[in-house]
Length: 95
Image (cartoon, rainbow, N blue to C red):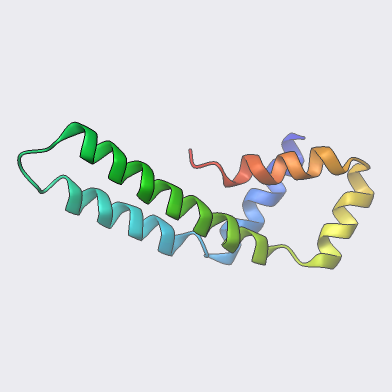
């Protein structure tokens, strides 16, 4: 499982499709914490909404990275579709 996660992470990293969501999130953090006074509830709601939007963006961009033939080869090699799809979900989680 560790090798599969490493492989998928490296494939996503080589595609450079993670840069725009990262820049968007950093821009949002910088802009949202420039405002004073900071309301906690409104800040949390906006942060959760922004993070949800960015996670959907990351999910769609990651789905475009893996070639269908490459996906079939990985499924044949690891012999477990459940493990393959779990590893795809784990790779999309921001750390």
